[in-house]
Length: 256
Ligand SMILES: [Zn+2]
Image (tube, rainbow, N blue to C red; front, top):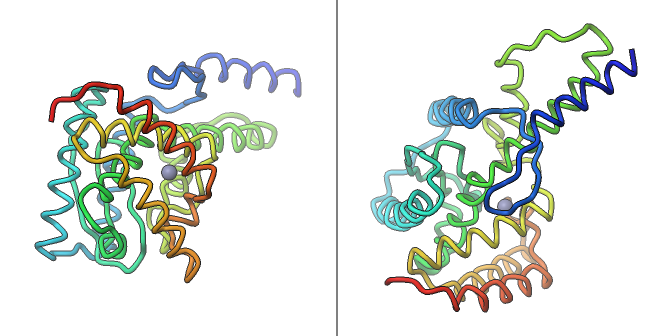
């Protein structure tokens, strides 16, 4: 039985392993892009049923302005084929996320903290980067693999798509009070920082505002740990890495 299980897991690793076209890192993803977008749409509906959507005209205009510019660059350069939509949620949480399929959610708590469009572009660029890099699905796939191992031993394989719904919800924090629950690994964070900065830079935002934003978040964290920061641990190493990316970015031509 154990040997059979090892063979099966090996097979999954073989079929599920793809090289990410942007990072060139091998990723284990057992969910197809179509399935992933479908799950994103389902999650979007769930969130809109439960959460309070803000109608604050200033916040909505700001999110639409910034997110649509980031989304345009993402589509032009990476072609995810998303149907982009932007929402402001009325909540004191300092948080934002992007679901596969291009559904961006920003909390009013975060909008109170950012000082300008460039700082908001830092957050949106980062979250869009997680979606394009398929980090959520990679995490769900790891969970699937772990759970599959357990279940296979117990009662054999009887998969149904909806069974992975709860895992997806956990990975994206859908329906939880705290937004995105599980922090991405440091590796994912660095990847999203790098691609996020590229997106904001190409969308004609000032990438140096990202440094100011993260310093601001670090200061805010001293008073009270904001949700976005608890899943996006910010430290001096991260900020140093951002500075290095920015120096490289500035050599890339852009039309603004
Ligand atoms: Zn992140």
